[in-house]
Image (cartoon, rainbow, N blue to C red):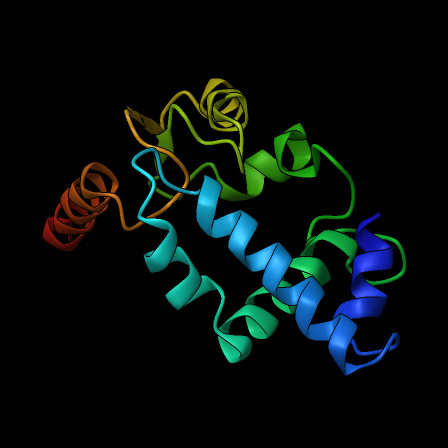
Length: 151
């Protein structure tokens, strides 16, 4: 399904299909990424814009399909949670901010990472996926401020 969308997003099925597919993808994401959903008009204005929708959908589709059959930038599902990978990043101060009602990236992913990196800080917010929701912004700014105070 995702690969079929990729063909459409790259224009292999014609421009009309390219823009229809990109708008459908983008508008869906805009509709599910926040706990408090914006108005339909606001979603269509931003997420339904031809240029925005095409760029957004292509980037996400590429991330999901990847290169040589490997999605995203990890070699396999669960790659980051492997002990060998965790040892490479364990020394990096880590703050995980996750929306409890995120239907794009399930909260279980953040929880599993936190379990494997117990020295990390996990903030489970009462939000969806969007980094533009007020509670997520607050937690990200707090984490950034704390990092900036470290020497």
